[in-house]
Image (cartoon, rainbow, N blue to C red):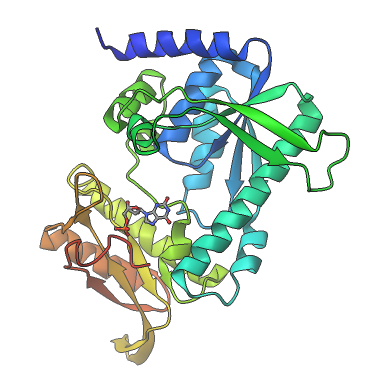
Length: 323
Ligand code: XMP
């Protein structure tokens, strides 16, 4: 019979058998899948696992701390945090095209992660041979079912390592659907905020700023986003909403009035959607009082924002994200 306890026990045994006394690395993204995969492997092999979190500076308020503190507290995992904010912001400077942003963020991410892997290999010894991934059953089906290996090349000037390192993949979630992964995460004692986290794109807030990405704009958007999330949670709406992108129209200004002065600030877009699988979506009919509260708070508390607008477009024709 399928129970989370059985799944955990079975996977722990399989991971122990696969990894033996060697070592593994797991990249954490802040999302549910990588957190649960890491927690399972941690339960199986303890300090033979090293987790890596690349902080690209594009996360929402509190999310990096959630990984650094809450995930570590719940699992006891060994965690390496790479602060790469400056590197990502430099690479993104002046770029406003969405696909270009994605390409840059993806490229930098791989470079930073590989560099971290190499440093761990150097420290822990080359018997680090396993890479943990939070692949789910739907990903397995989509990609044709193969399991495999991953390569990194040591072109980063870290001496004393073979030119090419091949990792074997550990994928303890391969038989699970998303809701099952959440249940397993709960069983493993991960915090609610991690286990119930709504979808959030890998490129983070980088693709929620229409215009180019700067630290100031990110900070502003982080504040607005935190207010929206706080009020949606307070209103008990998290389970009704698939996700709610909060978008900064950085290249748009409109006239407003605040106190006794004219303002010329940016709009923030709220994009709450309901969906089953993100392939199609409808805009969420949120209570007016909640919308009013979010709007009042954002315009009062976030400097340079003088308007909050609601996106009432379904997908299709709109996508969930604005970029
Ligand atoms: P769209 O905007 O295409 O989004 O309707 C569908 C779902 O995918 C997420 N999304 C991304 N996730 N990298 C990701 O990891 C991306 O570049 C990306 N773009 C969109 C989006 O948040 C939604 O859940």
